[in-house]
Image (tube, rainbow, N blue to C red; front, top):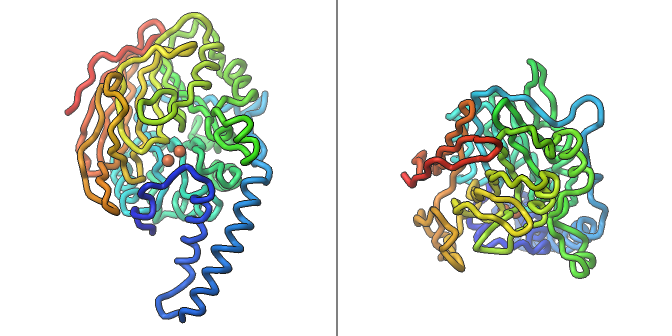
Length: 388
Ligand SMILES: [Fe+2]
Ligand SMILES: [Fe+2]
């Protein structure tokens, strides 16, 4: 179990995240009765040599090979019932008291599907995937019909090995009574009225340090993912008038930090001219925000929702502008390291034929926002949205 204090002000700096991973291992190794000399020696070995080795291996080593779905067989497109419940958690895997509380609360809702939108801390190393996510005491709330995961940037700080080798084989959904394990970092859950498409933006969010200076990562959808969207999901089929709900780790729109518009531009190209409004749910920023509907430049018309408040200390920094914000949870829950933090929580989506209800529930099981969506000729319409 980690302390949430360790996560206050955690940056996207890879050096800091690798260092924190090793510091954590060190703290687990030593016991209070160890002598000072022993502690110092351990610290030196673990933090200095360990850090240099792990950092360079991860940052300059090869990323884990990108995984895609085969042309025949498991296509990553899974059928779900017309009435289904889905719990969505993002930036959850911190292995803290907060992540445990959220995990156990979600479990009580017994959702059909539970989805993680990415970020296993600090660097998503295999050991951290097991400790923060897969071990029973990490409290991941398994869906009754399955669980799926997207990659964030943190999983890729260790080149994605933990994500692809440890996490994905344990994720999967039931299809006609058979459990199908997750093969790639993207997926589609669909019924007669909705398509919920999980996008991988994590793999392309990190490059080796030299390449990051020359060509900063833009979280673009890799070619094989675009090909999957075109050929297996058939996203460009204009006769398909189901409502689209995209999930990704990185925000396509934000007023707090840099957003990542590239995936939206790529989807616009696949979807063609018909600009049907879509819902897009994302994390990465550790806060809960409902945006007004935005027509993004060269991209889609998006109902953007940030739910990165799963397990990290929830930031309370004021936005640059309030204009596009419809609702934001800015209640102060507590103070950590002299910083006010807000409430952790998750989103709970209930599909009921062409209608859907999205509830935003905090760690104390208080519903703080609820909205009703409806599909009409392929467009997702927000019928009613209210702070509770
Ligand atoms: Fe995060
Ligand atoms: Fe992130």
